[in-house]
Amino acid sequence: PPFPHSVSPPPTYGYLGTIRDPETGNVIKGNFMTQFCTLKDYARTFPAADSIASRLDGKIIADSCEIRLFFTKFYGDSLSTMKVTAYEMSKPMLENQRYYSNFDPKKEGYLRQGGIVKERAYTLADQSLSQTTRNSSSYTPNICIQLNDAYTDRDGNHYNNYGSYIINSLYKDRANFSDQLKFIKNVVPGFYFESTGGIGSMANIFTSKLIVYFRVAGEDSVFNALIEFGGTEEVV
Image 1 (cartoon, helix red, strand yellow):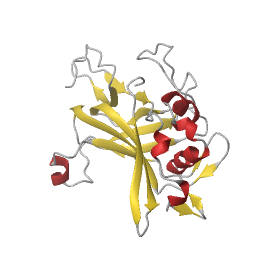
Image 2: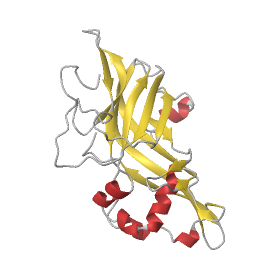
Image 3: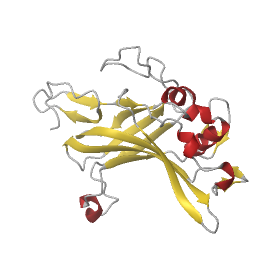
Image 4: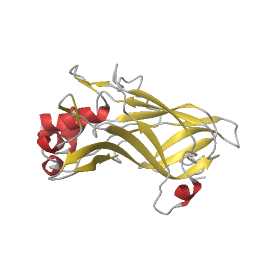
């Protein structure tokens, strides 16, 4: 196992899943939160708005959007069918407050009412991929959560998916992507991941990524492109 049951896991990792303690028979559940970071002045490197080829009725959109939870270690059975629910947070968790392992973001009002609630069934050994892919040195096991449903932001603006909200937020006010604090306060406060089904595996999530896919028009061709925001270590 990645850690003994009597020892707290390192604070820079998130644990996701539900297992039964072989010594006590108790059910142990791992849930975690994460916020995503933007590099300083990241918006300056983003393509000009008129070069974005991904559009719907003339408006800029993202082709798709997803969160990937990466792990290299786990406890239990990699073929156990599990379910995770991703909740959009309504506000960021700040550094001037202590958060303990029994902190409940639902009771404390950190989840956005009417925000994203996305369920995903998974097995740690992703059977949708070939064994050759899973054994490749370039592959890192991960749990992928698609965010491609219609999305409404806090101001009542409607988008075809969460990625379109992020891209349009950048063009609306690039300053919100200039540093981490503005980004988590005004664009993406973070997500809470709760194990909501199955028993038999616990994944050690060492990093997470929020990825937005779109297309950019060049002089004589169209290119696939993406932007990604890495999960921070401050909040798990």
